[in-house]
Image (cartoon, rainbow, N blue to C red):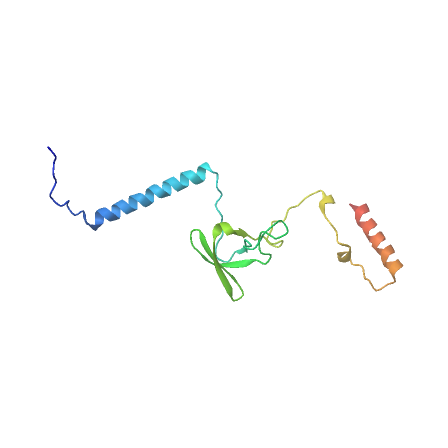
Length: 152
């Protein structure tokens, strides 16, 4: 039957060749993943240790549930795509895709706008006291609101 029979054992390539092969595979995977991320225009999340994040609500079913838990968690450990968040004595580990960076009103940048019509005023913050009678309070509220809107 004219077959070539190899009855010898292949040579042992040693651990250094195996390490090089694994390193090449990791390099190729990194290049492939970066190309895919670039093609999909993926944004990297800049979440570091100490940041406040909102964790995705696992029990959200239907449109009346909040998509994220309303109380922010503090990031205590950050690996590539895995974060560990703490809230008081409770801690949890989640993939970074299930979290969203929390920006509070204090940490938001101040935007100087010349148009003050976007400002919403709460009548309680105007400085009205509710100690007077009902009619006086209504009149004082109208006067203060008129004063606010007239000066704008």
